Image (cartoon, rainbow, N blue to C red; front, side, top):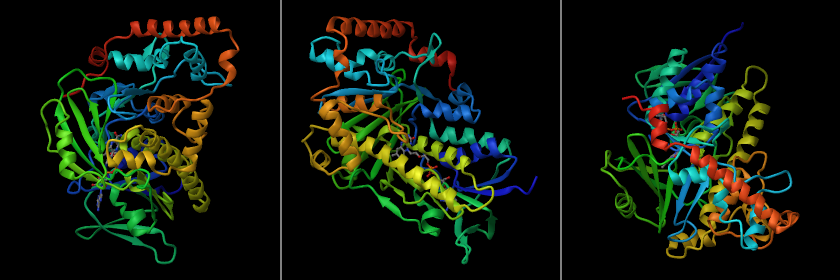
Length: 494
Ligand SMILES: Cc1cc2nc3c(=O)[nH]c(=O)nc-3n(C[C@H](O)[C@H](O)[C@H](O)COP(=O)(O)OP(=O)(O)OC[C@H]3O[C@@H](n4cnc5c(N)ncnc54)[C@H](O)[C@@H]3O)c2cc1C
């Protein structure tokens, strides 16, 4: 076997350690991996809500679910409760589960729309087990042999520590220190080495920029531009604060809209993560902090921590011999908990296209094209939550309600409003079930519908729907309480 390729991971937050771990776990005998991080700088320290794709990633990379959950105080997440988004006082759930039964021709909601128009069929919520389980505070990883669609809430710092331990035991070398300079070859434009303070240097063949919002390698050293999306996603600041738990953890994230921003509540086993996301155009830091502290339960464990960001992405996440993963490659905003997911998809993509030999240029092009499509699709889904609202109680909501949106999203919203059609793109993370739940939840109701609901006579349709909702209720009755399940499945390590 030839020489190992020297990979240098700059940064040790969630992105850095996920990168080091997945590379060493699957390509460890081909790569020599060094990770540089600075305790003095620290990590962003937030990022505690996830989506179900994390389970598949853990399976690919041999992470045992129960071990990971015990180490990170994790709880289960079946979806997100959105309060006050469509209108003040309204609430809906975007759950991870299937809603009813779809088929190749139409999504289930088309049958439900027909029933609804005829005065039967109840609520669309009656057809989703995960949604009803979230509301009832119940959970199990499966009912009978059928797994539930779930994700996790986790302690971000503990997660990085958990991955660090595993990575180091598999041979990743960790270097503590602050990167002060990036040496770039004047002829090829490739990065050659990273200069640390006290005259230390780490050379490499391939560099992964996980330096967070700083984007030290890809942005500062290689000059890859940042595409600003703040005209669509105006939030640019947050405060994060941890509180003691006052009740057993709920199996969902809460996203509470306020007049000039929104607040998250992420329940872990022994504490709760809270934060407020807002735009400095519409809200002062003092007002945001006060709103957050006025809407938490329990005692604060930490001081509210300010965070600043610009929504958007690097035009090319891979340039020369450097790829950016994590916040260095861009940030949407935490509303649908997609950042860790985007780290994991970038890693899988990188490993499929890893530059073992030959020209990197076509590999990078492929990586960048797929990344762009993926990010734009997630961006559209997040914008939908702000755009589709009846709220007119503040400048913030007036801005969002009336702003121009990307054509791709405008088309989706129009076709749904016109006749309820919805689809999942190849690159699109969010399934049709997700689009339907958010569109209806935010008050976008189709004016017309597909004819599939009229194929059966109404009486037969009603019977079919009844069967489905009964089966959901029967399965719901089999689920234990979420907290009881955690206690026996994955109690936190002290
Ligand atoms: C308000 C907010 C809420 C969020 N909520 C969620 C969520 O619910 N779900 C989700 O999936 N994601 C969320 N995210 C995103 C999530 O926090 C990040 O995707 C994740 O933590 C990865 O961050 P990172 O590792 O890229 O950056 P960081 O955590 O900032 O790590 C950067 C690393 O680089 C190192 N570094 C930087 N400069 C140097 C230097 N000069 N020398 C040496 N080392 C250096 C630092 O020490 C650190 O180790 C949220 C983000 C924000 C801002």
